[in-house]
Length: 283
Image (tube, rainbow, N blue to C red):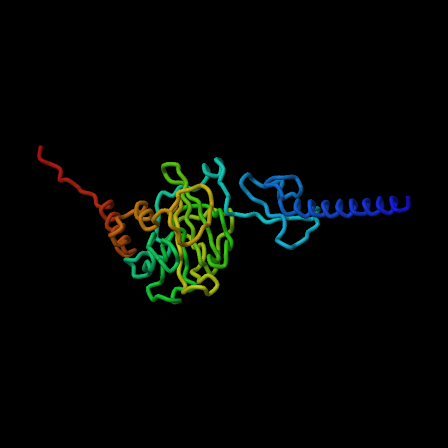
């Protein structure tokens, strides 16, 4: 009888310990795998579809009632209303001045093969004409009318990055991505016109010589991948796209301001000239 009581006590103790261990594991697992959209916190309740929500970092125990996870911007998808209200990109311009103006050169063009990096380049690398860090802090201009849909640092290698969304005259959506920036001057959600300064040239936390990495995506979903890949996916050649939307031919030089002023003055003078025809006074 005494042995039975001892055996039952040991069994009950074992079951109790197993219950609490299983309960703790399930609670910890639930804290890590938070649903994509739930009512646990205000941020999760306001989350749009497609936002994965990370509850906690690995090894970090957080009180579930005070949990405020961070958004993962890699799967942001603009909805139909956001796409319809984007500014229209009727024209485009170079982000750091044209090559004809001897301001920049394309150090690594789109889809250039780089075996050391393990793939092809996903954008254009614009450098100041002096090379290396001579363009550090130089202004970066929006290539077209657009709206800031991403502003942050997706990874240390990308550095400060801004993404603008543009609506084409045909109604489709293009994204222009400006990476390795030093300073970012445009706020998330702000509307910027073509030619506005949105930031300055940087070096991605001193990882590379200063330059601007520009990408253009034919997409309404923001996906910041690697800078080198084997498949272009939705990436497009920035130089080709900008040339298609330029007001003048890509090989034409821009008119000087002085010549435009002289032309306007000549037009005004022509408009003020009045021609008087002689009248026949003979009767």
